[in-house]
Length: 118
Length: 116
Image 1 (cartoon, one colour):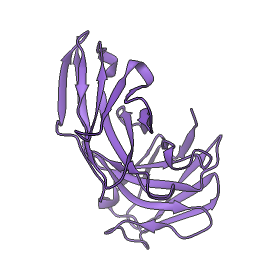
Image 2: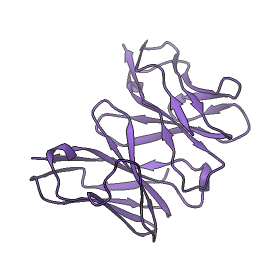
Image 3: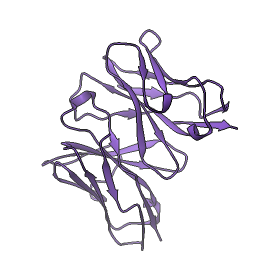
Image 4: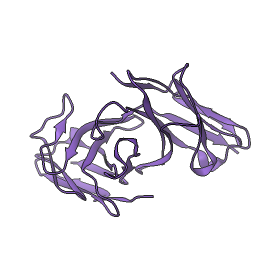
């Protein structure tokens, strides 16, 4: 199947700093990528839909200025957690759909990034 | 509005026995339906999907799921469980009326535990 690479897998940062997480589709192009947040023993919470070449669409309650999303190419989307605080500590997962597959295509997920803010 | 329900937080099965993980959905139109599995500290892996055609869908690792339109269900099944099947399973739905950029809605997840 298609591969989505997410980096870094683990990151520890100090409160007040910013952290960037990259999501790359390695063998397909994705006009749309999705960013999720997952709390322990809970389901995925969709944070935003990243659209190549345009602004991301954020879910209700997600701060746009806090979680900056950039989708500069058909294979790369980045999530930047700005001025991180301990409550931002979480497991962040990206996913992408092959644009050729269209609406019936399944999502391919990255391996996730565990963020710990001290 | 779209929604997915996984009524069981946890399912416990003995190895070798059949397993079922339940999923019901609600969409206004016709759905695309998906099952994913998640191992600890990992992303989600695609298992199978229903688009159209045969209601019984076969997927990875011996799993299958049956689309039942009248009951709006898409239960995941496996004839003989393995200990390695122990993981967190997510059902997901997307209303095919919307654009391909629209989001997929995930259920709350069911933790499957297979005892030796």
